Image (cartoon, rainbow, N blue to C red; front, side):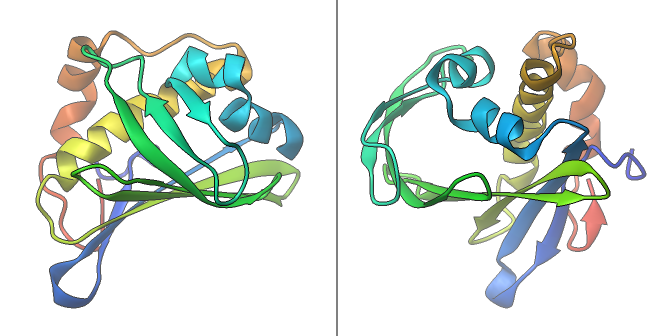
Length: 170
């Protein structure tokens, strides 16, 4: 499935670090895509809830309610530049940083989702999960059909994430 543009791309950085990046686009206005990423009611429909301060420097608890066993985790909003850029970090035992950048290209709103990893460990598993959430995000944004339940989605899409080689499209 390496030719599927919906899959993430992994690149290698110094010391074996990896960077996962997804690129998606829609004909919707940038303000609507931003709203689907950040407004509480819309956020809850595709990924979860955030309880805390909003805006750059805000801290709170993010709960991915779409998980089998939702758990609230500490999160910090590192950057918030509506409607262009949102950077968040999970600050619990597994430190994650996710960057969401929006731009307009040829009349379409483009989302570039980026997450860095210290090593190649678990990039494929995490990429599969983000792919599922991005499909759910798209359904929220467009009013389209939600992706299949996790097990069916994993059976269909998961094999494309088994070998996150640097420079490969997963």
